[in-house]
Length: 126
Image 1: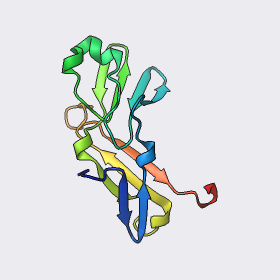
Image 2: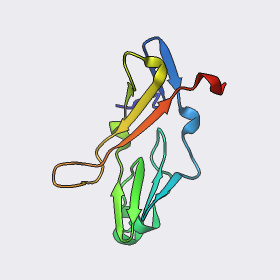
Image 3: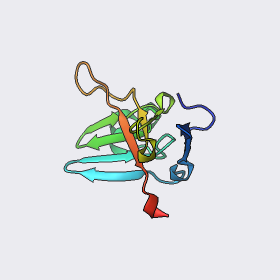
């Protein structure tokens, strides 16, 4: 689980530092079809979506790494304390790393929502 250095990961002789991706003033946002996603990297989402506040009341909206909202629904995308780093491919560590959060809202009777961030390396990026 994430501890004192939640935005760094070391494995296979490499080190990845994603701390500059964590936002403190506004969330990352993605709109897909009828759904909106707001999230943060290595931290809880900064804002509580208005749909969640309307449904649950501001004080009842749980902290989460992100939220999925649509017309009249609010889902949690995972809990910060569940964060786990891993290599995308153990045999090829230079491909990058994955950060996974679990413990989100139920999708169906047996599955909880989770969030997977893939940070892929591009040696030509500088």
